[in-house]
Amino acid sequence: MVEPLGTQKARHPSRRIHVGGVAVGGGAPVSVQSMTKTDTRDSAATLAQIERLAVAGCEIVRCAVPDEEAAAALGAICANSSLPLIADIHFDHRLALRALDAGVDGLRLNPGNIGARWKVEEVVRACRERAVPIRIGVNGGSLERELLERYGHPTPAAMVESALGHIRLLEDLGFDAIKVSLKASDIRRTVEAYRLLARQVDYPLHIGITEAGTTWSGTVKSAVGLGVLLYEGLGDTLRVSLTGDPVEEVRVGWEILKSLGLRERGPVFVSCPTCGRCQVDLIAVAEEVERRLHDLPQTLTVAVMGCVVNGPGEAREADVGLAGGKGQALLFRKGEVVRKVAESEMVEALIAEVHALLNEQGRQ
Ligand code: SF4
Image 1: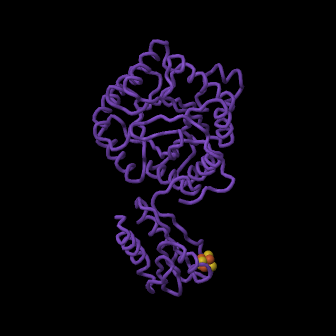
Image 2 (image 1 turned 180 degrees about the horizontal axis):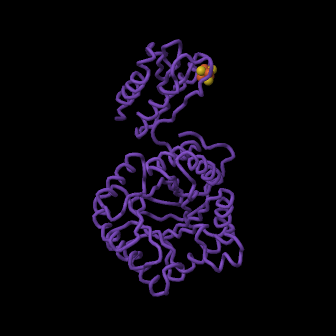
Image 3 (image 1 turned 180 degrees about the vertical axis):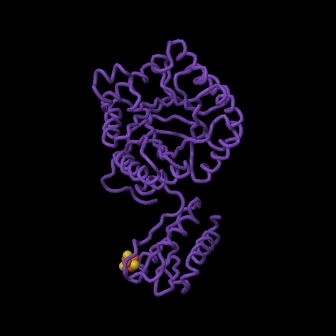
């Protein structure tokens, strides 16, 4: 385990809830979530996507439940999903009840948006009977009109007031299996909102930068926003939101956690940017190596370096590494040169060495 950075703050103390078998809060590892992008009514396609997410390291998955037909499909999805499933519901408490009957492990629902108190009571009763938690998800783009009028904009204070209002509705019914998110597409507003809320409640925090953008820009934004929050000790579970394949959301989420030394999973890649000294097609080699090892769950460090300046040093530090030369490379394992390989063999040689090492260590 990489030591957390010296000034990284202690985690915000939060109580623990469970989403299926996954603990959230109370010092549990920060979990990685995603959301399916299939039509939930198509249970086969949704399950196929859930399985792809699971292979990539997703730990909790959420499905949108916009109507009765989607709620009806949840039975088959829950029965066959390898991941705990959260139903994402807006406005209609009957959909929440249907989802709970179908066996979901969590609800994302804002109790203030489902109308009369008896409806909230019904949902809370059903959640309590099944030990199912509720995520209150405040989104800067859909704040209550009254708060918008009073604050003028979806400010951090307005978002927190909205969250506290929803929380109070559940607390009044004695329900505290709650987690909370406060998402805005603006990073500074999001960070400030979480800071404010964390001073007032000890519920686990689900963090994310919403509507972050495409895979490229959303990855950068999410890394900055979630990086700041996590570095400040805020966040018990995260979802990276990307306009793209949800598998990328999971990979980015893991990379953020790995970068801060908060979780370990799969390879840590070290590769140089290349420069005029490089005499192999290192960019292609590094991209291919990363693609081939993407879903490997075992932890290890893999280095792909362009030349002898920094190459052998980094490659030696890694579990398995390559240091490029002229049309060839040195293959290292645990600091020792294994052999010289031709440029055309670099990828295969490194992958084979990774698997050989894992086999010898009894890790696969
Ligand atoms: Fe350039 Fe070599 Fe450094 Fe890569 S390792 S950036 S090729 S000097």
